[in-house]
Image (cartoon, rainbow, N blue to C red; front, side, top):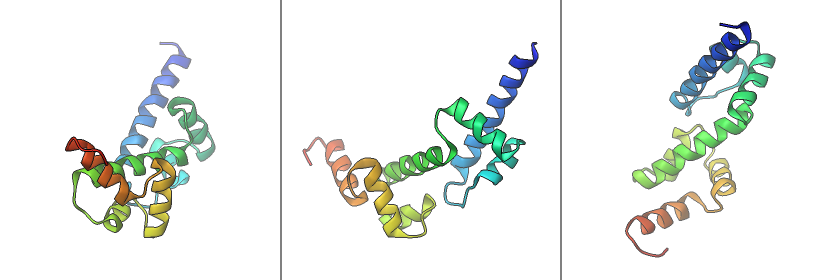
Length: 124
């Protein structure tokens, strides 16, 4: 196997390990140095490699993963918004609500109401 193809496969495998790590640790503080260690790459090389393979930088990816998990929890559970924010890594409820509203243009509570109304076949 050519070296370039071998390196690309190794990078894809490492990126997969990192994305799985992120999914399992969304409630924790996740930073570039930690993820570079998981990938066994330098922070600089990891950041470039991640963006090349995933199409977004690591911070954008983590934020999107957190918001998607929060959206799912809002629809599928009756957990309090504050609790959901903590489950996805936000210690400050106001920061969670702001980030969520930026992503979905609705507050977490409004999002829950709209999604549940849609699931029940009603208009929100």
